Image 1 (tube, rainbow, N blue to C red):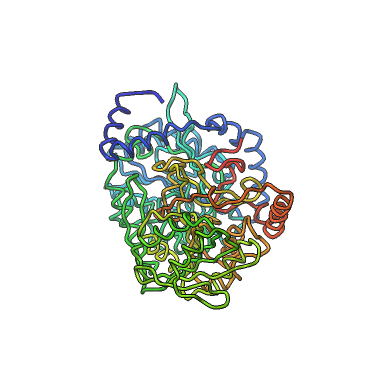
Image 2: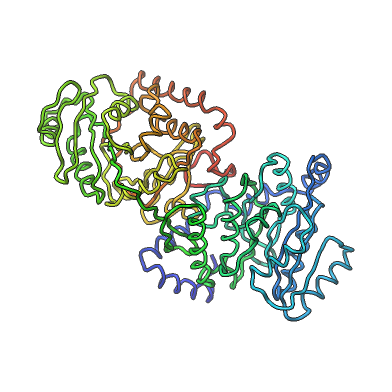
Length: 613
């Protein structure tokens, strides 16, 4: 990265904003080398001349060929940027489009350029309107929408560019998924370099992720919506300057029958010193507007929640309050390792949520110290499968129940759940040490949302590197934890390790689920004794229509190596292979289609959002 006076000035501003430690972590994220450099990757995968010709032929076979009105609000657009934007629209392989320009420039500069351009190219698909006054971005965009004759509109900024296959890909989705009413794509940034446009900073997105959208306007560009839906939600609203697109997208996705995603880079966001793409600090007012847009969204959705801005510009945290005082049952499987269990219990007792019970499932321990600790926790002797009962210093019930069969993680948890009294369950490994004292409130706030089935945490190894920040299906053939080894304080690709978002699965080392949903899906799959039982459980909950939420604001240490056995015998290797085959058979369709919360342009051999070669 070239050092310039502008970048030095910007760096000083960021240092003041973040402070030394957070600034250093952000710098490390920025300087992380690209394992697969994007610029040559883009050249390899962009639509070439022959592909664009094929698309132009293919569109004639589409059953639906809607007119798409591309809406562009203009204001004092530099001549070169304007002409390049116009060229990018005219080069589309799909030709049934209309370009709607609403121009608030006081002079005739843009008007004259557009008229000359249309004469030169004999272009009749461009509708231009000069506005008598500047109505702001929201008002100017609405004026552009008023020119639209199509059944769909697409939003394009006056200094940005569309990929030549953009409209073709959108129309392909319209034909494949006729229920879709809103469509978005991946994007990148372009910057002038040595007289050419350099492509960088790609943003490859998941399929629609409601919690990610509440953390950040990840959809942004290229956003297309049915004109009828846009009118139904009220078009763009004033009062959200800088975040008017975020407010519009939130309202559209709330009401759309389906939100679809094109996993291709169809939009090129131009970077220059005055653009938000290059300098987020240039529009600080926009982030306050984004917060208000989120607050309005929650009200319309009938959900309570407190929205706060995170340190990184344009990123938010929604904290959901707990309704009532539900009892939480914490299920902890255990075999020996009394010191490990004691550390887990001591961290648990620092919780600020007091309404919980603990059920420790004893599984064939042999160490004397383990039973001494059990008796200390549970001095009242039990009967049958109940080893003993007790009360923690905070007044919470605790009991040890005995599973005397062989190790089967799923069966052990199911057995422990059968002794639970709580409305919500926490599956917790004995080698977890809770960091966040308000963890139960945080998990409960999410799990009480009617659309959410499971909430999971951010886990660290003892060396303060990430062990778990969500699970992606398909990596390493089946599934894998994201961001292993990422330093605590770093946030990864587009801050995904540090914001709430939806994944297909989270680890059962620390997750919460309502007892009703747990029983609805039949608990953990007991044919999966050791591996992938949490993945399978989450996928079955997802299949019932619930979301899985990764919540990074619940943090804990996971001393995984302390309690985990090695696959070091023929029997264990054979069992592991059988569990892999079980998952592949049950979830073959998903493995073939790909994880909806993971972009298909990413590698399935890496766990940190690296591009596939």
